[in-house]
Length: 139
Ligand SMILES: CC(C)(COP(=O)(O)OP(=O)(O)OC[C@H]1O[C@@H](n2cnc3c(N)ncnc32)[C@H](O)[C@@H]1OP(=O)(O)O)[C@@H](O)C(=O)NCCC(=O)NCCS
Image (cartoon, rainbow, N blue to C red; front, side, top):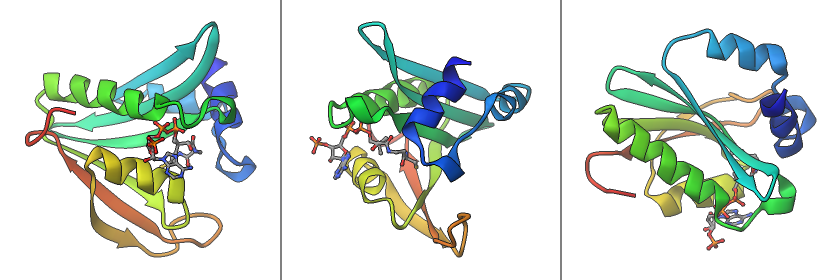
């Protein structure tokens, strides 16, 4: 499956989602997903879940070969535009406090820190909870 193969290329072994995980998510309400393609290569993915006027980022990853080419930023812009069109006001996500690349990406996009979940990840690391106000900016 394209999404699980791409996810496996983007994430470490203990964070990978298999085909069943994706199928299970697509069977639940409010799921939206994008794949960004370079040439003919699936290069990155973004998956969101909307619930009323809030949404969360379920996963965002870019294949190592295509990193630092603004692909994740483009996926975020596309996702935010789709959420605004559905009158969603706030986008949330959890990111490991150890994930400097992702934290830098989200802070640059305009997310702000709004909480912390202790020992949230299998490796014992905490998660930062970030939020993004979709009503105040147009990115
Ligand atoms: C985090 C991730 C999605 C970023 O994807 P990307 O396509 O390389 O990011 P972009 O090129 O769009 O980066 C946009 C900005 O984010 C920041 N950024 C991205 N990667 C960074 C890194 N490794 N170090 C520091 N800043 C980084 C920079 O500000 C960058 O702008 P710049 O390149 O002009 O300096 C990618 O590294 C990835 O897939 N990591 C593994 C999976 C993961 O951790 N996903 C996030 C889970 S919450």
